[in-house]
Length: 289
Image 1 (cartoon, helix red, strand yellow):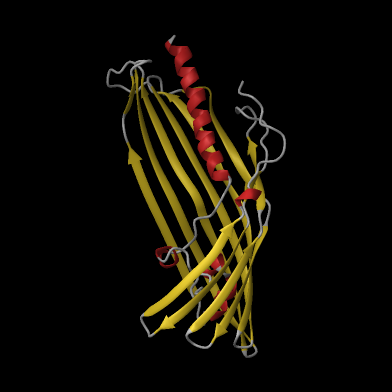
Image 2 (cartoon, helix red, strand yellow):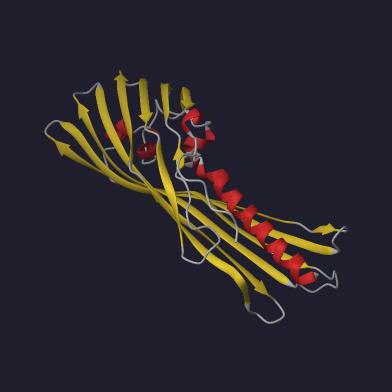
């Protein structure tokens, strides 16, 4: 009975782990840079640092020197959960990571500024460890390990047309993976069919940005981000053998900023994410074995 229950629990939490990944598959990227996120993402009309590669690539023309931007965040939670009905204790330990890095290089193009850059964002990174004490005797019987990372790789170029108008483009490519493993803690062995890996492969998509410089104190910017999709490839022998593409929803935004003195900038954005486009398409996943 305990063996059957253990196997059913393993299948259930594998499904939960994949569902957690699936929730993230309709990707609406959270943004980049502590400064931009600190003002609620109202950065389309500011876009004056290396994080503009994500928010509004046209703003990169405001950089006059090589610039590097790095951001990371980490959240960890842990708690105990007892299930009296089946007489077991479940101790999940989970962590979430969101990381960003970019490298921007301005180059002169006559009297105008031409800028190229590259960046990479870990849009979702989570590690989830479940420890099951089925006898509730204080010892762990089975451990389930889940780890997922979804990355957004970016290449950008922006050009300044005169002193007022700038145009920029950022190409994106989503990749990453998900892996899981269930271990019998008494023997140290991996349970049957208890280990696998999923690879995420995305289609390229583009962000187009524009920026108007209305004198030294004022900026108006806009961006349009295409929707895209990515598919899941699973190793042979894992639970699923086919998966439909998941969608990165498109977005657009309009923003403005006004510099008031040397220490204050006012900014505001109007933006929307086209979540209606975030619909799975393709062949349904096969059933569990």
